[in-house]
Length: 171
Ligand SMILES: [Zn+2]
Image (cartoon, rainbow, N blue to C red; front, side, top):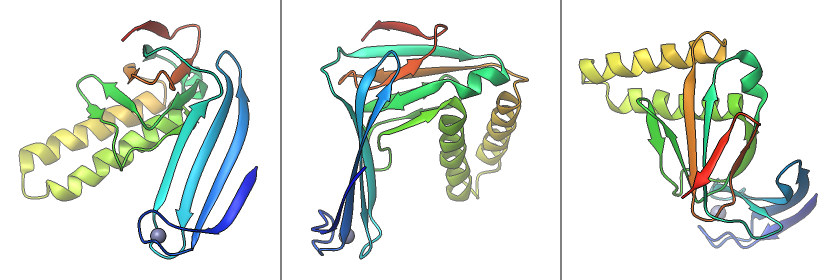
């Protein structure tokens, strides 16, 4: 892993950012670079992934049906949109970076986003109930007791779901 300390932070311009670059080899996807930036001064954090070779825009659909599916590897770039029908759509943007994870890790991030929304919807009992039900569903999926569909759309093609069960289609 390459690490550069005391770099200029693009957010606060202080020379307090640490840049890291890691190269990993992902089976069925190839060499992939994982970048991250962390600033000691303003606390900014950013990460993204980029494959070594060019990729076609793609859409992956994966149905989580068992506990084993939680270990399926996922590469999600900063340009990907994550859709979980009837649960959530996470658009690319400053709050949604790129990372290499597995289904469980992705569901944990989804849970965080939903939990965060419960704080902002505090005064709306209908929304609050809806959010609670979503969290219950996620908990069941993470125990392998309920199924869930995950769709990742990426114009850059930098994202993938590595499983024979994952369906790849053109975007
Ligand atoms: Zn900073």
